Image (cartoon, rainbow, N blue to C red; front, side, top):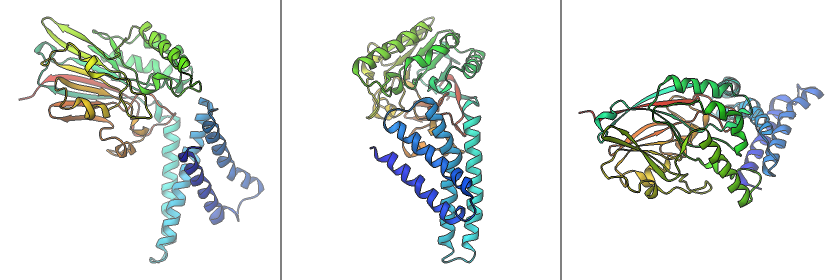
Length: 384
């Protein structure tokens, strides 16, 4: 059994035991006790399903709803309650102060969790970025790229309202190019079928360009056979191309404005284990001039620092996704910063730029602060 689920289950059990012994045991009736322990039973069932590979989207939603709206507030309450009891050893009324903080923090956690689960993951925002590029040809001044990423369409089931709203907002931006930077689905190409007709409506003067993310290789599907994976990947590739999207698999296209040109390149997913890695940047840039202006689509932002930065100075702008900002952000803080150096927003180093979209969809139906986003990017020549 994986270590992480064991530790999570232990935390959940210890939290409920502590709160039961400290606060609930003396006041709960028989049915009150049943209701008290029911969420833990649901979580143990949900985590168990995923450990044995029997988890579905419905199980996922139920499990995360109970964890976010019940277990997480309990954990926060228990933490501050314990801190208060420790403070009571040296500070008068420390336990009362800790209990007050526990109520406030636990309640705030519940409100954030409930909002993020019920509404936050469908609350669209459009972010605007201006990128100043020294190599940008004059005829491409003001060139507009609209980026979307990490749709994870399976999370929406067959409800197309969210995607319809997204497509309408994208088309209103009147882009020169629309790019999708990976993770169209979560498990299988079947997730795309209810949304194909709507996504086909995305329009831009120079077209829609896309790449594959780690989930698009369908390695998380219960069928782990090599043949099954290849079949699902080829089906997803065919479905994207049928929508009129130009899927870039370690290749590039040249966009022209008169005698000037802009290169849009795309690599397959480049990552460290356990994520699949099939990207080949030298192949994608084969034949591209050293003085060209290249916009690179690469799903995992760690690729920028590992291979792009300084090694390929003609890559003026890299567009990535993958992190989701862990679907939680307060101001400039997200837990993603503990894992990724570049996890969301616009970064610049040595004259090269990286924009990391925190995604439009959700691996799980929850977002708070890191709202679903469309990124509108305007290219400008280097400011003097």
